Image (cartoon, rainbow, N blue to C red; front, side):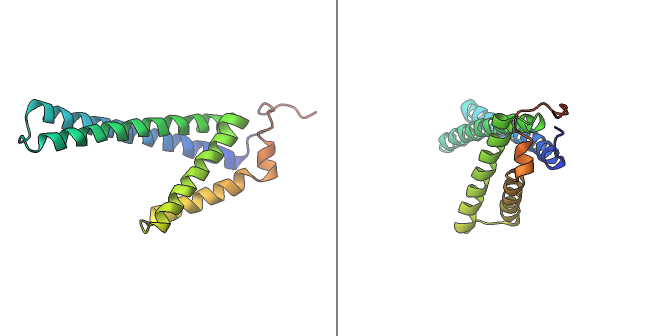
Length: 149
């Protein structure tokens, strides 16, 4: 079976998203390390040192969460690319549902932006597309371009 064009587009978008998550996570690690190193070296005034150290640790935590998100996104992208039911279809579905829930929480909390609304719309459209019967059939476990019997 050939990979549907929409699945190819979703896989490529997931690859780009995973790469950007890794970049943001590395930047958070770097900023957190820089701030923590400044706090340990005595660069800040003594009353600001604990706050700078805590802020540096927060940068590490944000970087770690970003690395986990990037890894999961890249696994889903690879799964979509090879039409894997578990690592592609189901993991992409879970990621899109979590993204949609987070966007709805942001909307209900009054923290909505244009990107939040666009993200929610993209998640809904992608979920509707992935759950179409002909697209779900692509993930039935047959190799790509296998002869139909």
